[in-house]
Amino acid sequence: MSNNERQLTPKEEIVVNAFEETRAGLGAVAERNIRNEDTGWSKIIESTPEEELTKTEERTSRNSFCYRRIGG
Image (cartoon, rainbow, N blue to C red; front, side, top):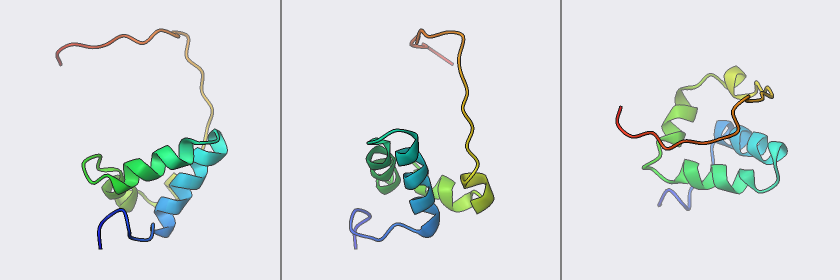
């Protein structure tokens, strides 16, 4: 069974639902990232305690510009 055909784990479903509640459409983006083995999302979610997945907070940023960073 490929990663795209498998059922999401309960923890992965929590993440997808949290993204969708934040903004409509983000749940689908989160699910694609979870199913894409190259992103590492599924491994991160697996290793994160469930109580950490349910914490949400809203933050603001003083800098609204995004800069591309070159180098390390």
